[in-house]
Length: 581
Ligand code: ADP
Image 1 (cartoon, rainbow, N blue to C red):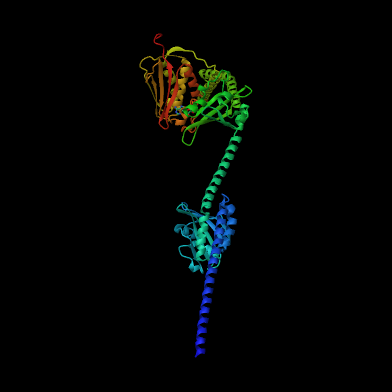
Image 2: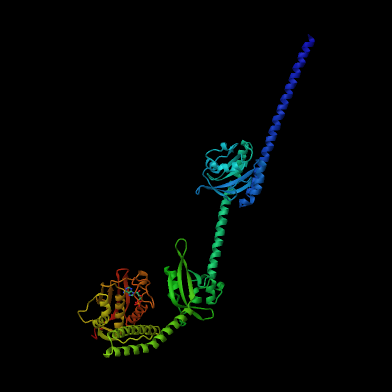
């Protein structure tokens, strides 16, 4: 009995001891676990701090990705890591960094549409997540973008949004080839890493944008330099005070200074201070200064620029206003070219025209004289056919004589030797004479010619022959550029002009002149291209001579025209002063 009791006692004590040991083991295990957790957390915190340090160490995130990836690997086992930048405006994402397993068409720098991508899904939901793809059937139908990864061997992925402000700027992706590679605490770690790199990614985007802008600026500067340096024309800039702000090598070469010497100096004082005769050129009259004042483009065809050796050269230049981005005037660009050679070529051309027309005049006059004599001589030996030939020869010789006359006038005009002899005469006589002379051409085209304002005598004080020449030229143009059966009007004094001038208008219903050519028809040798009168021949000097003749007599000449409707050529001549009349 006693033995039994003793045994039971022992058994109880043993039981208690075992329970105590179990308890102790459990406590030990819990302690070990929490120590393990504490160590793991410490490791993770240290790695996370290191990641922060790495991404903060350079403005260009590409520089640090390598070290970053190595650090992440200590926390999460992955086969491939990537950082994708999201562009919501273009609806695309760009793989800014990729390391590890190769996925076709998913290299760094590749750009893909956001639609259907895992990146989009994570960026839109702004939450880190895992996808597992044990087989292709596990790929969500809404994320076809994952097929490429799956085919390359990826079986699970973590995506963590990289947010800046309240939007996702990118997504950090970690891929593994095992379906169970990742656990929930890996997702949390991935999010912490994504948060660590957010600032760096945004900075890096700004940095990349700045780098692109700087590269573009460098490219533009190089391109500008190339254009300015290779241009044959002188190009320089002036600020609002007229100081030179830049000059290209051609400009410096032409004026004999170096580019550096020109910068900062007053352009007018250095190259534009005097007229060709040496008289001072006040800057108030300078067209370049006018651009700085009125903001308009000024073209100048005949001035001189001065070199630093005190010689000058003839220039043609354009000064164009420069405005800043608000439209404020900040200076002007002056583009100029040395026209010495062109002036020399013009001189040679004028000399040639003058020599040839002088040499032609005598033989032409002589041929015409003899032809007239033969035609007048009614000898019976001439057949009708001979007579027709002779008359054609005489008509063409007359044309030739007029052409030689015009050429002589042009060369006299150039040499300043065109002379006029004024007298008083009735302008109506000039009209009658001109119309008689042109009767054949007028009738030939069945044109209706009318004259208004001829009821009373119209006495002018001008060169009679030159006035005939002016009117004849305007009339012959009106006839030439008007279709048959249309009308031409000569209006004498229809519009009264003060200052003792008579105004004459020659109004036609002809082809008209394009707006940009109206003012140019008075230039020497200028003809309107394709004026609609294909067959009309000419030299382009008639109006230049008419203009010079009108102006020499103290009048003005101008044209108004509407294409397809007709033209009005008008000129003025001095009336006979009342006192003399
Ligand atoms: P030409 O008639 O010999 O060519 P002009 O100096 O007389 O030279 O005229 C210059 C240009 O002006 C002509 O070529 C023509 O294009 C244009 N022009 C002159 N008069 C007229 C007009 N009445 N109608 C249309 N165009 C004209």
